[in-house]
Image (cartoon, rainbow, N blue to C red; front, top):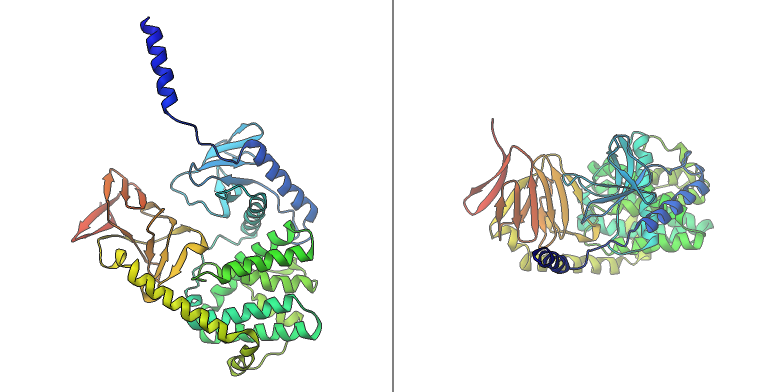
Length: 433
């Protein structure tokens, strides 16, 4: 009788746990996406970059950190089940679209989209595999922060350049050549204003821009579909309040499109710190003025300059409103201050908001550094413009050994690091032996 009562009690408890949360990314879905990605890469078969891009590939669920891979790792960390290799991605490591060494094998890593979308799954797979190809060519993962692209002047020039590039891609003959010339003049004007950032901009545009170009080209079936997807992505980034962490992804793709339309051999691109705009200039035989700013103003009226000015004025107003309504959390209330030493960031570009001299506000973010790992889900965090410091609210602060929690965030500290209170604020520091 007692055994029967105990059994009923266990059944009752199991029923109280509620439904088990399942991801849409089942083994069947994973195999379908892996097969589709392999077929796309085999169809190209190295024509674009000289090698078949398909190789070790993993999708990672950000919440559970569950890995779905197409092949095993060298160290046997991944286990085969239902035709898919499963594992868990370490919590101290950042999840983003990149090439990663996991278990002694370099995988292309793609975060799972929050919602099921076969197109996004496939493009993320190609995107990550292209970064894996870049890594194999000696091009290491970079985290770009083109903060000059959040200056009002730079944003005006880049918007003018985008409008001219879009016109160039949609035209031909002399009209196209004139639009390319205008785009390069706007580009030159921007770089004349911010000469110290040119090298980093070139790397950003080649590293992320060529990845965008590659996955769009390989996953679309016609020129019309390609351009539709390209311009859809351009419109999305155009609307962002900050371009510092996103502009290169579309910018390089626009110039790569013009190169591809002219029959350019991308296998000749080496090293990757090249100027895609200069390659377009040479391929289309474009002549530019000695000083681009001398003529940029006069041609800007052909590209809706008044509308762009209005957009940027509204953006500045929005920034001022955000300063008044939201940023006081990080400037006048208690905060936890983290010093950034060797940070790795994971975020969505649309969640980035430039706040002038105060820095950049990230609505959500995941950061790993020497001190550990931080996940920000709500309220946001404020990062200084020199990317040396990060602030999060100290409201609701709780400490449980190396786990620290606050309103909208949680942190895991590495061994040898502690949190100390100083006045109303808190600081993360390393213990001195």
